[in-house]
Structures are given as C-alpha cells and as structure tokens.
Length: 163
Image: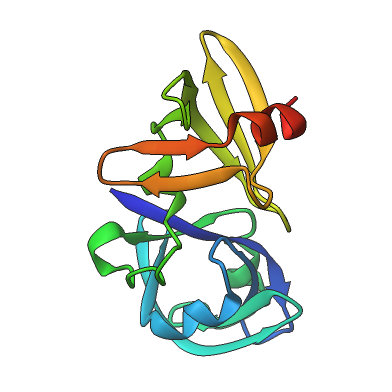
C-alpha cells in the first residue's frame, strides 16, 4: 500500500523546484526521504528546504519551471515499507482508516473513513450511512490501536465536538 505524503502545489522559481504541501506531521520528515513517487514515477530528491510548513524539492528529471508545472496538483507517495516509522503516539492516516470508533463503554459509533489534517485533525465517521465529523481535540480520543483497527473515544467529549 502506498502512503500519500504530500501534494505538489506549484513550481517554485525557474530551476524546476516544486512547492509541496506535506501530509506528514512535520515538513522536516521529508529530510528522511531519498526519493518520492509522483504519478507512479520515481523521482530522486536532489535538494530540500522547508519553510512556513511547506517543503521545496529539487527533483531529478525536473530541470525547469515547465517540467515542474506538469507536476502541479499531483500527489507524492511512498511505498508503506519505505516510509519511516512514525514517532511514538503518532500514526499514518492510512493505518487508521477503516478503524472501528467506539466509546470507552464499548458502544460502536462508526467506522473512520477520512481524516482532514488541520491544526486539530477532523475525523469523518460513517455511522450507518450518515457522515459525522469530529475534531480530534484534547480528551476526545483516549486510545488508538492501529493493529486491531480500533479507536476509543470519550463519549461525553465526542458528543461535544461532533457534527
């Protein structure tokens, strides 16, 4: 399974560099990557710099602005086995999707179908055909077990932050 680690926003400058919105906890994570895949094609990372939460990459095979423009809007991926292990207490979104979300009392609320990254991530549950959004704010999620595909939430806090 491939992990989506970012999206190319636009060319940056005239030398083929691309501006990337990272889908990782930190733009600095990209320093651990030697290459990425864009549209199924492998690109070796030649240069990297970060700033304001964005990543700027120089890629082999992307020599100028015109070549970089062709990558606009495309996702950057890595095979799951090549991705660095997330820090303790952090998880790849792909590992959480499909998880059962239940209360501490064991009541099934639904299945996690999407995570929208923001300053506080927003989780989307499928609750029997109805989509419910909730913020992953402090105190809402009490435990995560990606191996068992179970996320446990505090029922009271969940009801306060869900829509």
